[in-house]
Image 1 (cartoon, rainbow, N blue to C red):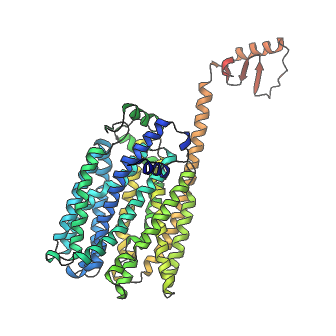
Image 2: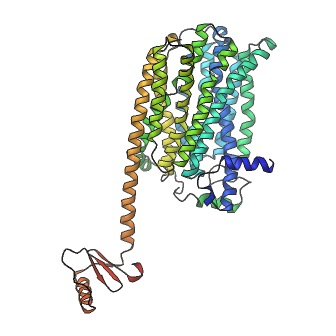
Image 3: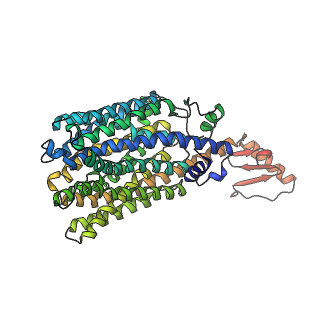
Length: 517
């Protein structure tokens, strides 16, 4: 990597307080950016490339070849979601016990193999089985990466990195459409196989090298990293620069009870539950189904046009992360308002339906802005739970799991394939979840500010208590009162809360030594 490209990379990931860093810390953060984000972003890119392949294959001939009818595409996606949910709890626990580089690499390898084997299927049940095990392997990628990012980055640094990570998944979704177009035009019929079957082979082969890269170069967490590119001094600095992160401890019954008694796990999970469903237009390929049902578009157009939604998501996610980086430490309810406005406009236009062609395309494309919530909410969760490493790990996984549990029944009911191309129930549902996203973000903001006020009061009380050197007694009060009189000090009334003597401050509760005044 030449000097010019290095300078560009540093500018991209420079945080708002970057000028306050020491030279050694800047060098450390550069290494963290280069090795952690390189792996996480490529992993998430391929993750979404593999995940999106089923929708692109469906629109490019798989529906006809497997004789799919009714809601069978939704059924396959529901089975995938079930596997994804089942994999959340083992993934969360594994990252507390097993080195992240080992766990992530093994999962990469498993889902890559499952993706390759998808080219062999000739029935819907076979595809369901492969997608189920593929989802279990993929379950750790999203929430696990947010957990790792929170272990390495400060609050003022994490939003931009989380956005880059989320954007890599969106680019994977975009690239899946372009890749399917290229595969369909160049490999369809080669070796007697349809183009959609070749897509699974290519996607899976891209995943295998990633597993080896992660095993040898991913740095785990600061407390346990053995990465050869970190010096011992850098390893210590990585721990010291995040003083709010406590020493890692195993999860116990008592610690789990403490987490479950907190509002954080419920408030943040409900927020992502609703916010995740604002992405329905893109996630459920509603635009692609409308284009296919109209029979006015080619296979290439059906695969390529919806990628504009993802491109809008990339821009909005990056913009939201830059703004969040500047608002570090503050509440995030304005992003809930933004998502509500986007869903209100998009859903209202599509509910009307009989609108000019250009306006309908605008509604589909605008919905891509809802992707911005993903990076903001998970980074916010890392920020809110930074004082408890166990809670932080549980909360980010729970957020992802709860949203997917909700999606299992929500998507088939609100967006069944049989409703294509017009999803009236779904667009009404979008209005509802948009409103609840705004409400949830306001509640979480209120609770975050409440926690900060409580911590300030506790800290003030702790500092006041630590400054006490002599307990206040009646005898001490009399002696100091006599000393005041002998020095000609002013007379105090009974209502005075502070008594003064030379080099001594006396309150009704305690006496401070002269060097503590």
